[in-house]
Image (cartoon, rainbow, N blue to C red; front, top):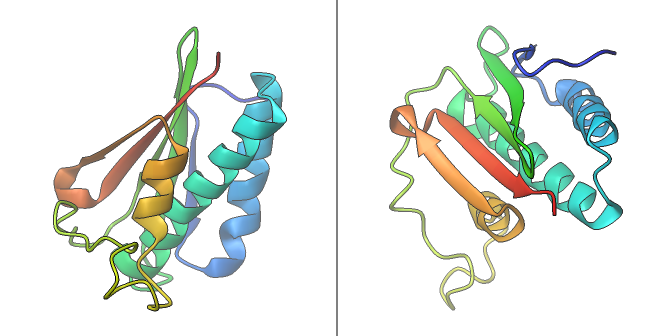
Length: 136
């Protein structure tokens, strides 16, 4: 697949479409010759964002779509994930490392994104997330 920065991937909100997202990430990382360490961070952070969009944003509604695209500059690549949900208050996410949350099986996606990406931005009431990765 030949990738361009304005190319958007649109998938329906089904977990089985994650393989398409993983392939896109692999293709983008190959294109920009991303190293193994950065590749792992990108793969985990972006798939967490897409999983959150499927599960929490679009509530597994297969009639709703998720759009994913990437942008690049000289030393940075970013992925944008946008769902069709109602959004959420991304400033009020509980800390999964606090004692009362440590045993909970969910609630680590945004924490992982913030830990693995160099910068994370939410827009449109949380319906859009942009993950930035430095390539140097």
